[in-house]
Length: 357
Image (cartoon, rainbow, N blue to C red):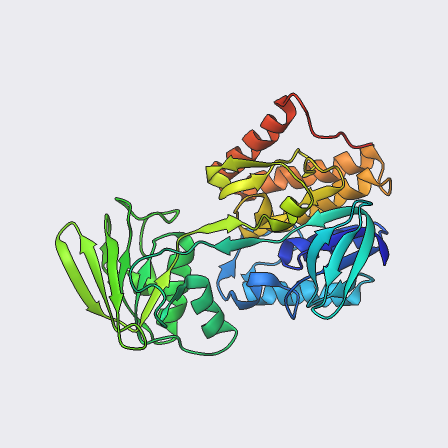
């Protein structure tokens, strides 16, 4: 199987990259290990307004429904339930559907595997009823299953508050937020709307979760002493880190950037990694918001098409520059600066990234 461009990961970044490349006339194959395109956006009912030109502000579910509709109306070849498992010496990528494995040869590749939630380990963390905030969101928004009735949320980042509000709207009582740091870590530092009454315990940690067959109570160490709460749901929102396995397979160099989520592949302003055939898009390039995620997909597609000669350098630079300017307006300042620092460090290395043709 051959294509101009292979995209691994059919979340919003991968779909954005696929539609952009197809618009410029490229033959595109898009694979994803899930049963459906869309990634984590499929269960996100929060409202997004920081979207690029051409997108109407809407809840995540509606945004991804529109993208998927455009995807299936395009000429992009979409393969769900397909996983990248290896790379051949001749540049082919090995893909499996669980039954058979086959190679795909593309002139360039975009890797957009997204991010994964970080767990937090404490005594009793394996009890049923202890889960990540993302898992709770999947249950209520995709599976229509209520994961519990009384909950605590570990973490006070933006995602923690988003999921806590969605749980509250479904009838779940949020008993407390538990935060290890000395203050709330969400972007504006305050609780809003229906969550204003919920206590926030800062400088606090879970000592143990207990229960017979499932979580029934949690003990928390706080500056005021030990607190115990009867709960049947403990949600953990400990942040996200980029998924790195595809980049390791493709022998891409990694670097550590705290504000991008930890270890990320090294890349240049074209979103090209140290493997010149591989470009990066989405949260794998640094944990960020939906608008920048979509724009990194577009930038990666434009750069990949420049690399293989479908776009000339002048046209690609014009298209890429427009999107970088918009990305800088939409992205969190600390994340944007960390991304710029990463790109600058890629320029200053003794063994610089391979230049595009």
